[in-house]
Length: 93
Image (cartoon, rainbow, N blue to C red):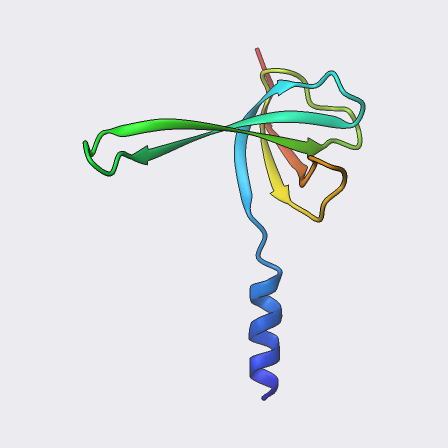
């Protein structure tokens, strides 16, 4: 029975991690990250690019527009903010 509890606890803590590009950093402690996903079209079997904008928490106001960043899912921080900045992978040139 104790094995079940640890397995469920480990599954519960798996959080989604996404890589994307910062498209806006004008808000205080918030960045907007565009995540691009390549999805195969069900009928035509061609790859389609889908973009999703995520609002992420940036406590240090460190990220700037054009930076490649990694964000992680977290509890709701505001009406739209459900992600937080993990690291800046690459700075904008």
